[in-house]
Structures are given as structure tokens and as C-alpha cells.
Amino acid sequence: AQSVTQLGSHVSVSEGALVLLRCNYSSSVPPYLFWYVQYPNQGLQLLLKYTSAATLVKGINGFEAEFKKSETSFHLTKPSAHMSDAAEYFCAVSDGTGRRALTFGSGTRLQVQP
Amino acid sequence: GAGVSQTPSNKVTEKGKYVELRCDPISGHTALYWYRQSLGQGPEFLIYFQGTGAADDSGLPNDRFFAVRPEGSVSTLKIQRTERGDSAVYLCASSFSGLGTGELFFGEGSRLTVL
Image 1 (cartoon, rainbow over the protein chains, first blue to last red):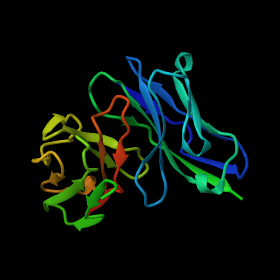
Image 2: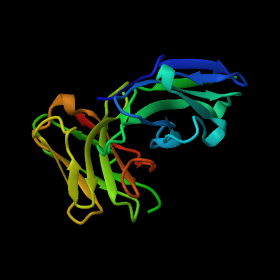
Image 3: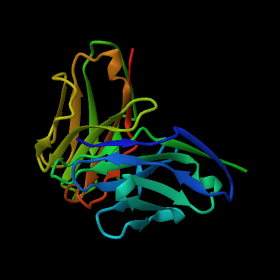
């Protein structure tokens, strides 16, 4: 079984400040990990993914995430928030065993204050 | 079309009625997924198709839910005897060859409201 926990359903930052969205996972096998973003009235869009290559993964729009096996974490960061980053962010895990489904966290809504 | 298309975008129905939700995936994508997203929650897996067959339907909540993909392209999610608890956004996604390292492309969803 696998699960994802996203700490903080809402995060608010000032424009230009660091963005940190937390994700912890549980998986009995080496996981594949993903961050998706959902803008208002749009479909989920892949930000970045970890698939057992480099532990620091760079994605679109300046986001990156670091896989830390010892902490079972895959936190999402961006050095400087932009107003356009306001959206809902979902962390997801796949166990890679062949059950071809993602397990999503409950999401974190990011607000960016001017 | 360029992306995953879902119709209808909104559906309001009465308790006990039958509904169908349609998904048109990206051309050439063999894998198709249905998810359900309730208010304040992340998407919840329902069913996965590889080609025409349902490779994993373990997420379907009960036998009122059924999905088909007869020609390996368009898929229809069917819900019988709808209940108020079925109200949610139903998301469809497709990918080139199934998960693993592949990216899922999501549609905008069909919002179902059961009165």
C-alpha cells in the first residue's frame, strides 16, 4: 500500500518569497513521485517527477523537488514566488509495481500576496 | 484535439438517475485513467485502461460504476442509480504507454452534482 501526506492545506507567501510545499510518502517499494499543479478551471498539469535518477529534480516554472529516502519526503520548492504561481498543488506516488495508478495527496492551495 | 477532452463539463441529475461521462484522450495514447475528486480532496483512482481492456478497476467504489473503452480511444464512465455521495469532479487522463515514467495528461473534468 502507498500513501501521500501533504502538510498544510493552505500556504500563503509574499511575492518574491521562498515557496515550500511539503510532501511525505509511504511506499513498500521504491516509489515514483510526482508533483502536479491545478490552476483554476484547468486540468492537472505535471510540474516534475522523480523516477530513481537524480534525487534533485527540476521542473517547469522554476520549481524543483528533492527526493529524500531517509525522510520519505519529496518537498516542492521555488526560490521566489510569482503571482502566477497561485494554484493548487498535488503530490502523488506510484509504486511502480505495475499497478498503473497514482495515489494523490489531498493538495495544498498556494496563495501569493502582492 | 490537442488535449484530453471531457464532456459534459457539468452535469446535474437527480438521485437514482443514470449518467454517462465521456472522455476523449489524446490521439495515440494507449493508456486511459479515470479519477474522482471530491471537494477538498486529491484525485482518487477509479479505473485504468490499456487499449480496450480494463487493466485495473480496483478503484471503482461499487457495482453501480462501470466504464468502457470499446475501440481503445474514447471512454465512457457510467454510473447507475446515482446517489448524493457520487457528487464530485470526475477526471480523465491519458498517457502514451501507461505509468512508470510516463506523464499523465488530464482533462478539465466533468463536475457531477446529484440532487
